[in-house]
Image (cartoon, rainbow, N blue to C red):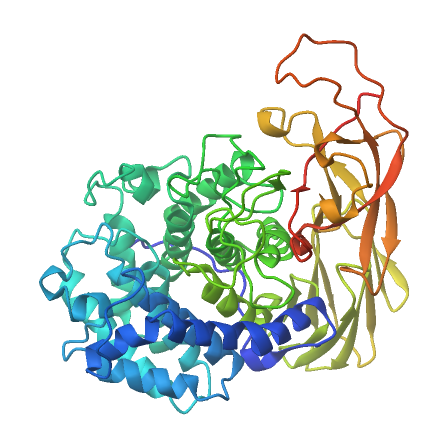
Length: 616
């Protein structure tokens, strides 16, 4: 192992140190997750056979195996969500007992291979997902270890028994799983158990990848990130979820082993992804065929895959980089993802979901297939995204702040209470709808203490006061160190003027177009708000008129935007024609734009994020 230590700049807060207010956006999402999403996921696991698959192993079901061979992973993700939420339904106890009963004596646990495919165990690692499923079990066990659920010791015991099997089986092997995930899970399991072999195995898996051990497969070794060692790789590539999960694990390994070079590689690949392969919503993945990153600047809005699990994985990668480095840009990306690419994946009902997340839907789109539906669906044949969304939202309070004995760092602004270093603060805000965040000191510990507030890179005008006294505030983190008194009041205003954002000129698909953004929220046009009698695709943005903020407490969102648009008539039936003089557009009209994450909650129809710019 390297002798130099990679610095972990920040530390997560304990679960009991954070309480989100239910009236906040995050608190509301968590409440919806508990009331609707989690129960829905539990019912779907029963309906689609995931639980019956495990009961086949115990002899309690005679049904045929159903679903994909990695269906167990959806049980584990749902279990993790239930543990973070403090399950009261009995689901955790039921699944803990089922898993313990289904587990082989040596620790192996995978329902697809335990009944019909015993002879194939560990022999199909390029696509079997055996260790991917194990990883999600380990992460559920981490949630169990940090909970007070009575079934927690049972679940941790099952996970450790399986992890010990992996250590014995793969501790000296050059093999890897075709789908990364187990790497970060093993490190997390090490953190709650202190058992060093779990960390060593995670590090081995990171080093093993990139030597072609997985073969060509259907899409070649780049699909698996198995084309060259991670330390030598210059660009993100292949299946997006695999890539971001691998990099999340690499950061975890780097921090725990002191591997500064590995951390630098993860940061280098972050720059590759964010500089030319990420949508304005934070979504990643341009290609449906292999759910993969495209070429640099290949970001078609209507063909965006932008899988929900990819956004979640990117969020987890950013979180780990934030903890490792303390750099504000990683929290900025977490903010963009949670308010756009992730939030848009779940419907207002909490029980319908997007798997892919396009940035444009055309008139006449055939949304009958689940690969590209017109609206969110209650479940999918490959249902990895809904329970993944459930577990992220269940643990959302984990990511708002970090802290240590010397202070508290606020990263994602939401109303709630936070505790660190003997101090406590009360945060009041309607962010991201309102511009002001008010922090009041409610308890104080001994000595000086530092409160750090993030100033997002998008904000060009931040105003900060402490007890009414103005303090300088620039992008990054403002650190306020003093001996605080109960009642001290910090007020941060992040001025949110609506703005137009254009993509890099090399993004051919949206050249001559702009997106409308306010604060961290990306907006879109949806058919339900378009003027009557105007073809949706003929709407163009009139840059000579200002964008306007519209507040509607009873609407889809408290803050909507009025966008000046013109309609350019199409006066020819021909697909291609000689370039004529520009046709005269109609007079401008203000049309409502809604937050992107709220689209498709009304009747099906076209939508777009990037709006063509009017020529006159």
